[in-house]
Length: 107
Length: 121
Image (tube, rainbow over all chains, first blue to last red; front, side, top):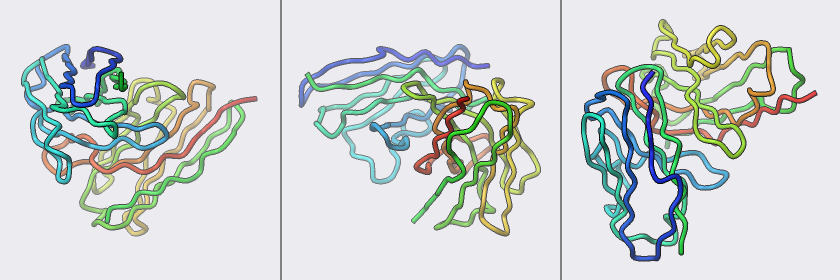
């Protein structure tokens, strides 16, 4: 199985800050990576697919990059409504696997 | 708009089986692979199973393999998950989710709101 290592597990930042989350795959997954946002008590929401493509309707303050084993998710300017847990997920091979999540809080 | 509505959760004792349902609407259900993903209380996301669009191929996560069966009824636009030999560690919110279009496998795009299964004596 492909292991996804996500860091940090949590972070606190100020409104307007740039936030960066990393995700590392245990083997080459090409660009087969999604990023999700999950707010408490809600279902996950797809933000980024194929490592860097923004899902329709998702604000351009969110972005993703990377390929192979190393990936980065960025919020260019943190807003209060971005408070959530973010997950990476690989779909290069079954079983699908998720990173452990990054909880983003406002400082 | 895409809607996925899960049902069938509740408090159940260890041992028996349980069937979860997911009613789909707002898209051509028979054109999409479908996933089940679960989330234990306070924990991260765990992929459970996927079934291809025509129901011919099914794949399962390691932690549930042998105890879980995913079924779909394209005539009823409904996805099912049968869990046998329920254990405390099956306690979780179970989400059904539509797979993205493209080469199989693809991850989920739209998710239901989830149904909570609590296994407790």
